[in-house]
Image: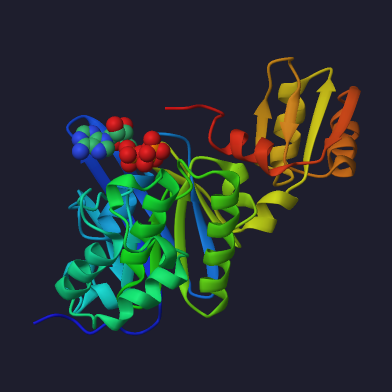
Length: 302
Ligand SMILES: Nc1ncnc2c1ncn2[C@@H]1O[C@H](COP(=O)(O)OP(=O)(O)OP(=O)(O)O)[C@@H](O)[C@H]1O
């Protein structure tokens, strides 16, 4: 007996860990995805995004922790295809099969009426190409077809793994509008990317991971707006201690011997003065999202 979905549109990941041999792909990851918004799942290559999405969809057995979709583990959901639509990779349709036939086969597999096929073809803008063999499709069209399959069950939740890969700028713009519209209708979108620029314009909320652990979770604007100050001074260690004593904990020692501090310039200057540290330079950085992403994720590609 399957479990009834609770209709919440919520995904909950709690303490998720996954080890492949000696590789800790995901390490104690917890986050919640709510309906009515596009949640971007961002991290460098190899940071554990695909593993996490596959765990949510019951395709990877966690080493520890749990994932719930509408209150139940995905494999236990009754009619999961009506709860979640997923695009994990541009899944191949048989090359000789038309898009329409491919969708008909998928619809029958999840128990969806055939009328839905024409609806999803129109939704993803493939109506005119529906009777062409999928083998002749461009990568962008193949991505749209994969999205059409995900939409067949009219799901409340969409999970997409790097759907922008291989899309041209028009394709990316189209996808962005589609996902925003889907979220605006009160449904849930979780979309992964390693490219901040691609996700920044689409996502309302962000979950940022690095080396399998969460480094930021919250409003996309919140990440944007964090203040950052670069300071050159006579005694970076003493200043870092004085800032920490005032509750400023996000402090990096940077290559030029200075500090990068997530606080505003007045606080940093006042703290230096009180600590008897001479300040030689204080630059307020407009903490753009790119810089913050690189800082949070160590700037590295795994
Ligand atoms: N089936 C597997 N067997 C062994 N190692 C794996 C397996 N799947 C993933 N890994 C490893 O786990 C780590 C995380 O991989 P994952 O694919 O989840 O990252 P990702 O963030 O999706 O990366 P990308 O952006 O490159 O797709 C990597 O080091 C990867 O090599």
